[in-house]
Image (cartoon, rainbow, N blue to C red; front, side, top):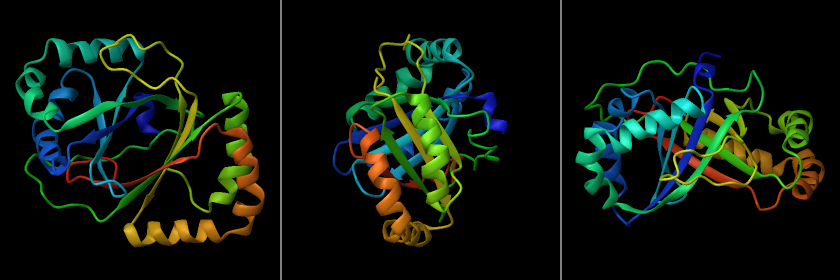
Length: 239
């Protein structure tokens, strides 16, 4: 699992002003990828949320919490790129506080190596799609992870490309808040939007899922699961 070299993830969901998502994505993919990676951040994925035209979702990774703090300070407080482009980026944003700090649920559940990123200026959008599910855990997170492996995963009828849980490390970069509830998040990749839609329809029609797994799941979560239907941008590594 190559991406275990970057085991600390941020999953960030931004609410944007209507009609500005493509403006932010163009700016982000052109100016805010390599400049973050230059200070020790791994930008893994940028996505349009297909269920919300005003939501931009992205994922970045760090070696550990100390490296995260140092990299965020270098980028946001000391870096030229953010100082230069922050006004244009912020002009698109309504809320940026929906962020989760995550670590792999097990030693084998991190994203695998994601290949090479398309160069700056690439405009071709991949046909592939990503599904992300976020469960807010009401009990012990270790016990829920075991429940996921023993009951949920076998019923999913797909192989998650990554499974992550809340990292308990204190957020030392308080300028960027993170959500504090315990979660388990899993991701799956699909060749295109039709295959993802077919998968979700089949899962919803599964008697094992609806009659056996879901009732148990509902007892262990504190809110309905969050479902993200993600379309990678032209320069996203995860695709």
